[in-house]
Length: 90
Image 1: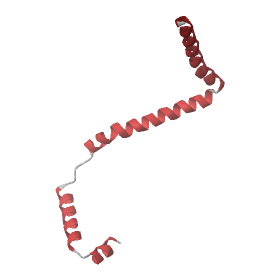
Image 2: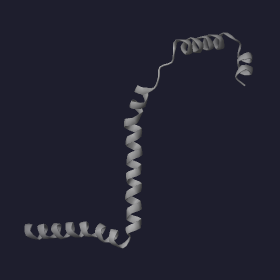
Image 3: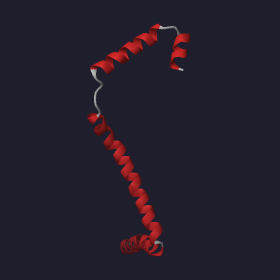
Image 4: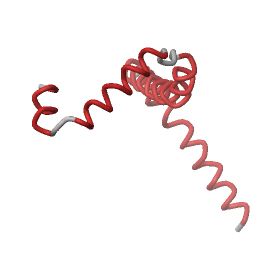
């Protein structure tokens, strides 16, 4: 009983490994394009995952004048009435 199961699993394993090989031999260009697409997708995902902290580490911090200008703008924007703020942003 156990030897039958071992032979069955062995034969199913060899057929499972031979099917992709046959498909690649039948459709080489399509197989290459699929592998290229998968690799490109994985590369983009890795770049977005790992590259974002690296990009933020090298991005320049705003200068004192930029921070001061932003703070003044935010203060002015919160102090003026809504109608004037809408006209300024348009």
